Image (cartoon, rainbow, N blue to C red):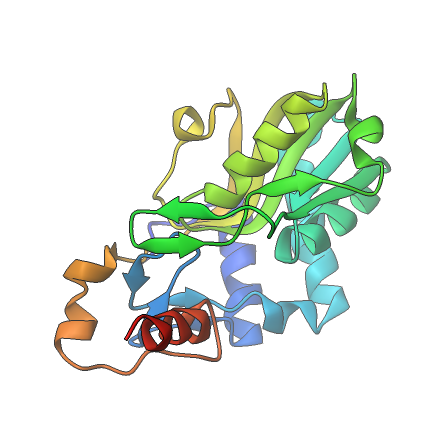
Length: 223
């Protein structure tokens, strides 16, 4: 896992992540997409420090300020936190999407949680508004894409998307937006579960972070 040369926002972002112990390498993780990989950005440990969370989201706010959003929207739970702090930095509204677990989604590597939807009257909040969709870390971009779809279905105008950290696995075209902003690109290799090198080597799956616990539970139920 390696990061490219860093710029203004990237350097400060990287320093905050390192200071928080958020970068985990040489382990075995299962991502939201169902793919496996060797690294994880443990954004939750940053959330424990509100000054660091505030610092990161102020940077993201500056990165998307020119998009002139009326509303910031993020997928729960990590994107919810980023949405609120970024909206606070910009002085605009904040809403979030959440999984609809009444619907089953067939992923390439097995079932994943239901799609992200707007509830709690947030569909009315985004209707007719300029919306930027944000998240903490973009792995495959699935959560962001589903949130974008939910906002558009409610009549919101998605003017861009942004994250604190991109793993470099998705671009603006993949997300269906013209503007894709991130503070830091930190590349982490990943593979379909069937081709996972770590599984083949017998490396235990991390159940403290990502979706390893759910993955192992599904494996047990299928036997």
